[in-house]
Image 1 (tube, rainbow, N blue to C red):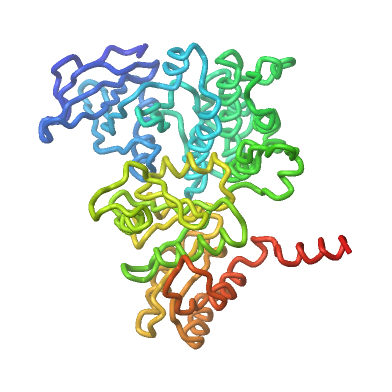
Image 2: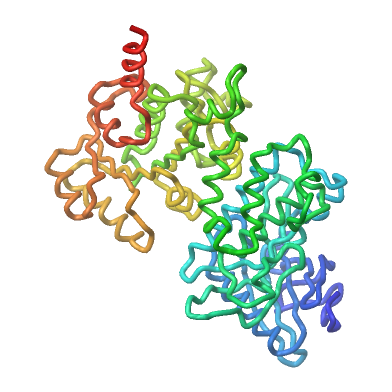
Amino acid sequence: MMKQPSQLEFGSIVGERYRIVRTLGSGGMSRVFMAEDLKLPGKQWAVKESVAEPQVMKLVRTEAEMLISLSHPRLPRIVDFFEHPPSGAVYLVMDYIEGITLEAYMKGYQGYIPQEQIVPFALQVLDVLDYLHTRQPPVIYRDLKPTNIMLTPEMEFILIDFGIARSYKAELDQDTVKLGTVGFAAPEQYGAGQTDARSDLYSLGALLLYLCTGGKYSEWTAGVEGYIRGELSRHLIPVIRKLLRQNPEERFQSAGEVIGELRRSADFQPAQQGISVNDASMDYAGTRVVAVLGVSAGSGATHTAITVSHYLARRSRSVALVELHSTAKAFARLQEVVEGTSVGQMSSSRRFEVDGVHYWRQTSRADVISLLGGSYRFIVLDLGSGQDNERLEEFLRADYPLVVGSGAEWRVQDIAGLARSLQRHPQHKWNYCLPLATSEAVRRLRKELDHDKVFALPFHSDPIERDDEMDQVLDELFRGVIPDTRRRRFAFLKRRR
C-alpha cells in the first residue's frame, strides 16, 4: 500500500479534466486510479498519483519524461503530467489498459500458462525490451515481474510501470539507486555495478522460469530443473539457464540475441516422423523476416513482396506473406479471385494459399509475433508505403529489410530522401529495389548511398509466376541466405554413381 494518504477519492477531478472512478492498484510509492475524461465522453485513463519525499517526485518526473519520448505498442502512452504543489502530489495520466496482470492470470489458471503461449509471450517481452535497449541512451526497465505486465483480452502483453526504469549512462560505475523486486531482479541491482540491458534479460529469465514452474521458482537453484513442467520443450531450459547466470558477461548480451536463439530452437520446427531434431535443424535456422517497405504509394511494394515470397517458396519452403495493414485491400481482392467468391463477400478466414505461399491479409503486429512461433522458414511482411511507428519498427527489426522505390529517373531521389530521414537508424543491412530502373540510375544511387545492395527489378507482369530474369536478380539479392539446392542435388547424384 502507498505509505502516504491519497489526495483523491471517488468523484475527485484532477487537472480540471479527469474524474476519478475507482482505484486500480497501489504500492509503496504510488496509487493508480481509473478516471473518465470530461472532455472526451466515454474515454477512460489511468491516473498515477505519487505523494512522498522529494526524491520520489524526481523519479516520477523522470518516468514522465521517459514515457513522453517513447512510442511502442507494448508501452502505455502518456497523455498528461502535472503537479499539485500544495499537497506535494504528482500526477501521470496514461492509457488505461483493459485486462489483468500476468500474476492475476497465473492465479486464475492455478499457475498454468498454456505451453503454446510461453515462447510467443517471451517474444513479445523481448520485442519491447529490444526497443527500450536500442534507444539513445538505452532505457533499462529494471522491474520486469508478473505484476508489471498486463495481459489484454487479445492476449497481448504490455508493460505498465516505469517507476524505477532509468537511462543507461556508460560513464557510471554503479547505480545510485538499488531497486527491483526480489526474485526477479538481477544480482547487480543489489550489489556493486551498474544495471544494463543484461539486467533486464536476467529478469526475463526469472519470469520464464516462474511461468515454466507454475509460479514456484524465479531463481535458478539446485534441482529447480526438475520442477519445470514436463510437457514443455527441453530447448527452453538452456535458454533460461543462460539468462539467469549470476555474471552478466555469461548471459545473452542483447534482446536480439535471445530472439535469434528462440527462433532457432526446436519449438519452431516440429520434428517430422522418422527425422531427429538434430537432423531437422541441419536444414532449419529459424524463421527469417523479410520486410518490404515502399517509399511512396504506387512504388510497387506489394508486387515486390509477392514476387519475393514466391521466389523464396520455390527456392526454400514454408513461406508466409503478411499484409501488415488492417485496412489494406490488395490481399482481399486476390483472395476473392483465388477462392472464386463474389466481390465484397469477405471470407471469414484471413489466411489463403497460392502456389505454396500462405497469404495473411490485414494482419496485426500481434499476429506476426504468433507466426514467428510457427514453422515458417520465411515471413515476408508487406508494409505498403506506410511509415507509421508500428510498420517502421517491423522494417527496422527485420532480418532483410527491402526498400522499394520508383525506377523512374525523376523519382530515384525518393529513396535517398527516405535513407536521409532515417539516418539515425543503422542501414547496413538494407536492400534497395528499383522496378524498371536503368543501370545508370542504379549506379548513381549506389554511389550516393555508398551502398552496393541496390538492384534494378526487371518487368514482371505476374509476380506469382517464375521469371528467369527476375530470379537472377533475386539470387543476387538473397545470396548466402538460401542454400544452393541445385549444387547439393548434383553432388548427391555424383555420390550415387
